[in-house]
Amino acid sequence: MMKYVKPAMLLVAFVLFAATASLAQQKVSTIKFDELQKIRASPHDTLYVVNYWATWCKPCIKEMPYFEAITQQYKGQPVRVILVSMDAVQDLEKRVIPFVEKRNLQSRLYLLDEPDGNTWIDRIEPKWSGAIPATMFFNNKRKQYEFVERELSEAELQELINKYKP
Amino acid sequence: MKNTTTPLLYMVCLLFVGFLMAAIPASDSGYQVGDTARDFKLKNVDGKMVSMSDYKNAKGFIVTFTCNTCPYSVAYEDRIIDLHNKYAPKGYPVIAINPNDVQVSPKDSYQDMQVRAREKKFPFAYVYDETQEITKAYGATRTPHLYVVQKQKDGKFKVAYIGTIDDNSREPEKVQKKYAEAALDELVSGKAVSQPNTKAIGCTIKWREA
Image 1 (spheres, rainbow over the protein chains, first blue to last red):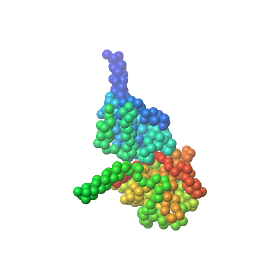
Image 2: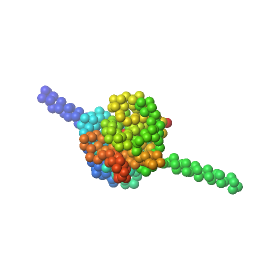
Image 3: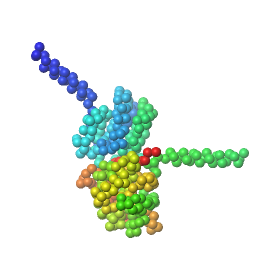
Image 4: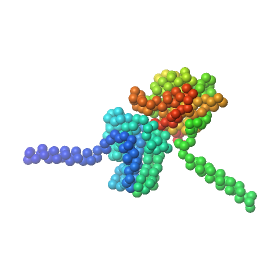
């Protein structure tokens, strides 16, 4: 009897580990501007919702649960929320990752490692003054695009998703 | 018949123009480089009212929208002090304006401004745009947001530079391009500003909620 206990415990441990791993938050990948441009140019018939935020930005953190809710609500559907952190790359380990872990964020996460906004802001959106939060909605297949440079309410976000979701 | 329809037509036209104007987003309003910037009368942390016209010998100003709370503003505090110390003797002092509404951002209150100015020993005026009228007129959208203005012969203030201080908010020692200093150096030596618009990531201005 005893000789089965250990493998059984291991199995239980493995199942628990697998279960928690599947619920674990997303990893934060550090990207440069050309990779951000690739995301912006995604050719798929998918509504991309790219939100620019930072751990130090209060209004960004306020609206973040609404974006997370969209990720949950549209699982398996062509709606993709991407959270792009404007935090400095030096703050990835001690600020961004702990933040992501604490909130168990499920949306796709990137950190844009481009300290000089002047070299890229105009190239991704000339209308953007550089204030965050800011959010882009686009479906390149359908030639749809909308840019919002302010904090969104839950209702405003849902309205924009309803307007553009394929 | 003609007398009644003509005024009606005017009204419809006026309404239409009104709609068009209302549709222009806030980010497109405000000053562009080359525009004349209005003067202001705002309360400094020492309790006195400050206007650009008070500085008789100034050749211009580094009007800086900044605040107590935005981490980017805090990261740039020492560099704003340095800008003032370098360019005030050359005729371009800093006037820092806090644009944030105290209801939305309580730590940006006038009292907190006084505390911060004392802690950092700000050598420049740090004034409060409580009504946000000046912030809207200039078209500032984030903190920090710089407007370098140059005094003209007629006493008006012409916007010569709008943008950021440099290319690295997080690591001052890694700065390669000092955008604001480059613009100021050109102004001081009587040249046109070669890069009059720059952008950076910053905090949104905390607008008063309706």
